[in-house]
Image (cartoon, rainbow, N blue to C red; front, top):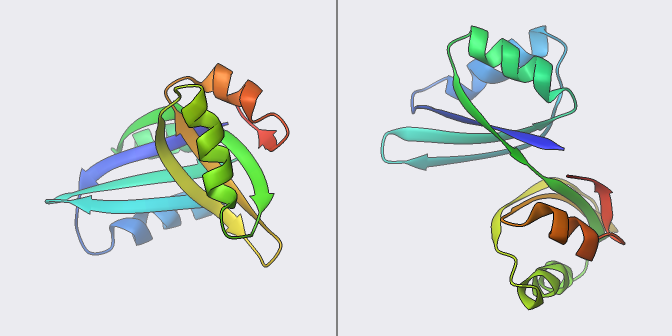
Length: 132
């Protein structure tokens, strides 16, 4: 799975504009993370059709990059994230980004961006539902 990252000037309505553009093109946002650093907004999106979303965002003059992400489903219990991140630590795999895609009382679905995606995908195979 790919995540789409948008780097833009922070302004009122930025997220509304991006979500409107994607929505009118029938692209659902499955996961979203947004940070403001100085005067810049960094928005990471998980969508099913990243190729279509990438094209539409670029047509609308958004500066984007993409990352390979591993999607995992884990139990929604204290320490569950620690369990999978410790598995990665033991193999010297660095987590560069972790975003919540969905969560309920039983389980959570997360998108992980790591520095060694093939190795991480293999190590986390019992948890993965999509990935590199």
